[in-house]
Image (cartoon, each protein chain N blue to C red):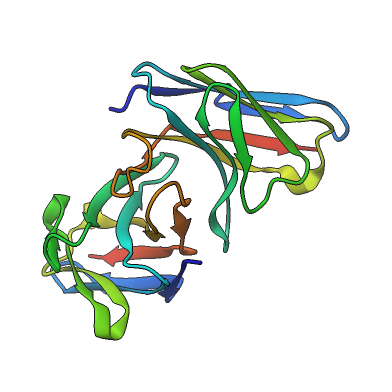
Length: 116
Length: 113
């Protein structure tokens, strides 16, 4: 157990509404990631963070923003949700120091988001 | 840039039979390679990882994978499938430093009694 929780675990919302998903870790790891999982696509990286207020875009960042004001929390926001953002969202953490190339990512339980 | 190809989106085996899930990677630098498993309605769990220490890597639940540089492959095997192995399996590759983990599209393993 890597001490990762995600909230909410399930959410149904309507097109055009803002949505924020939260990832919380208890072990003060520096690196945190947000992925989405869709059938036939595997997991695709949305955004990641390598420290407080340090974030970068991933492969599918359009329509998403992130914030990290505390080490333990990494928030993913959909400013105006669309049906194409219906997906399962996973948060991950990576232990290790700067440039630690061999460190493994550990995943949270996921949030299932449905946009109607 | 790194990429991963998993051959076969769905593999079905009989209980007790050999499990072979294929993964080929592309990387411009020596890669770090991972296999993750996802059981229904759960997150991803690390099965094993290759970090250049040994080409044959043993993981949890009796799985192992062999890194073959000449074939750019990292196939996952298990000698005898169990019903509890039914899940989705993801191969992933990572370069050095802060390069992101890149996942394959996954292979769903079904085990038939």
